[in-house]
Image 1: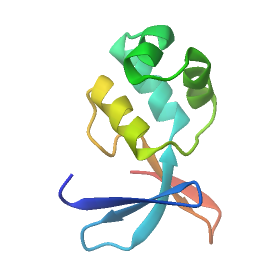
Image 2: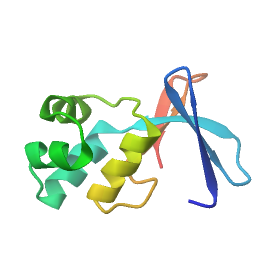
Image 3: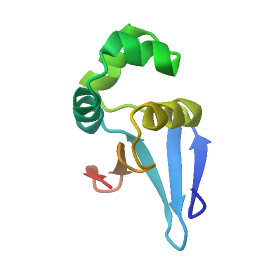
Length: 100
């Protein structure tokens, strides 16, 4: 994680890669859902391991959303994923979203 910086502003995660401009990011629901499926971990077990409710896990599977940095770290740790695996970039000027 040495080459990036996370900030939290107005309920939106801000990500800065070394040498790049700041970008707004959020957890991508499709990538999260796929990673959870591939891991073989049930939503209930995943919720228990990350300290959230199973209901919140279902919400994360349904809709891309902002999550806290600590929760994001828990998610990628439990799923054994690289730091950028579940993030999507939000370009508000052009109203477009792209995945890392």
